[in-house]
Image 1 (spheres, helix red, strand yellow):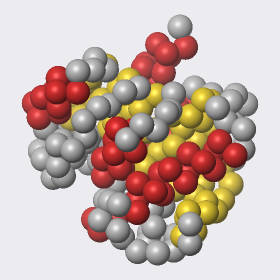
Image 2: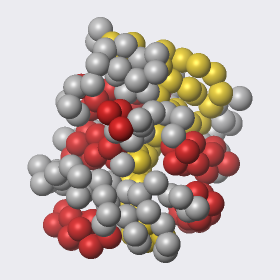
Image 3: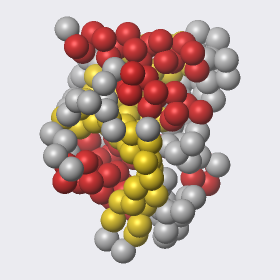
Length: 205
């Protein structure tokens, strides 16, 4: 059962929900753009969390600064990167050594910035990285990226543009495109959950 927690990030207090599981594996799920209604209760975020929990992960979803009961205000993606780091530190302080990052839309951009700056994590999953909406040109390296997912009809995270960045980074993650799916995963949540379950099952082998 999920429990409400508070993550300290310098002078900011972040609201989060932690769902403990039996293993030492944990994942942090970062939500879409705060100025466009994104928060930790977003349906895609919830779907990702359920898929990971079913595979034995403890899950942590949290509200970026200025959203929900999190203090502070939107910081154009700079402070939000510190929020992600604070969430990693929160889990590490609780003894988790196997920590993954999963982000949807804006959340995937924030995670990518943290990973590219050398943050060591177990796995990195990007769901619809918004490359037609936010620049990824400053992301120079993406180690530990295991999975990238987007919809065939996603104009904010177009498959062709994502593929170009994957090649530029010189990595070879699993790259899945969900047919008949847009950026908001209307009618595509079940497909996303099945895809994530399949990916995580493969990681167990």
